[in-house]
Image (tube, rainbow, N blue to C red):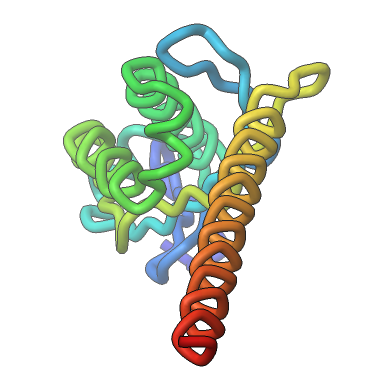
Length: 170
């Protein structure tokens, strides 16, 4: 057969052999108490088994869509089991939890995560001020503690000055 004659029944699927990135920007999610939040997530993948991946999808965009669905499902599952303050405090551990959650599913697509999925940003969903209120509460606690410490230090200094002046008078 000449090279310009296509083979009948042969499908050619082109997939990358290098690491590729998948981003979820402005993804709406909820915490354990159904408080809304918005996330930015980045994940890096590599096709481990090209033949399996080619059997599962018709093109690379289809694979990206499937991986995005898997990532969204893992995000919902993990965040729905935690409080918003736990989510804000433990970004690194959530990246590892996302990776563990999706690894088994990814293997069935012939794909593996290259490194931990990164939770880039957590912010209030539109119309919500929960995270802002948590930050304001923290700021006010820090300010209160600082003012108390300053007042105690001033009191100690004044007491020391009074004792010193009494000793001088004696």
